[in-house]
Length: 179
Ligand code: AMP
Image (cartoon, rainbow, N blue to C red; front, side, top):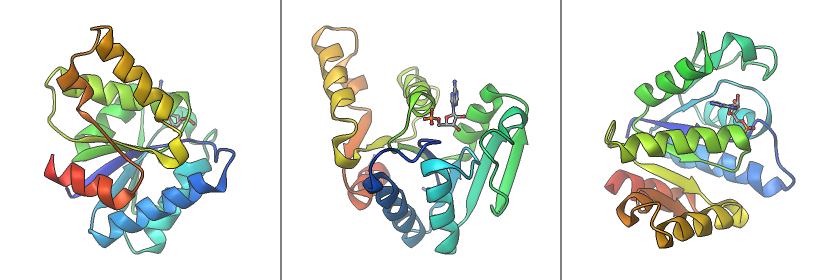
């Protein structure tokens, strides 16, 4: 993988561990020479991971719609910032630029982005790996819900298995590279 897209909160969350995890994922990416693609904001976990990749000398590409440039305070120190026309274009550009996708803890926007990319894998529109960095068990309930959806026969087990989950960035990236 040359570039990985990270979906994550525009908020920082309640625990400092979420920020630590963003920084340790940033370190793991830069050590492997993998560039970061993300939503281009300077706030929350989004800003935290971008700053950490830049500080480690890595490449960061931000993709942000014009309408959010002020609201999410677009980051002005990135390797590249693409200002696009809409949320849909943002997600498409982020997907096209990236060789894999990771969700860190985040809110509704993060879930929406993760599930869109997963449904595109399910439909066979791409074959890129998708992973959850399950920091402090933040995504335990989501994983249980997906298992429940398999039990209830709304999700096929091979589709459930498309979502890799780990609590360590190193392990997650290794799984994704082997995917
Ligand atoms: P959140 O996880 O809600 O803090 O949002 C994380 C990022 O997802 C932010 O950059 C939001 O702009 C973005 N986002 C929010 N809603 C959507 C959506 N419907 N589609 C794509 N991205 C979104």
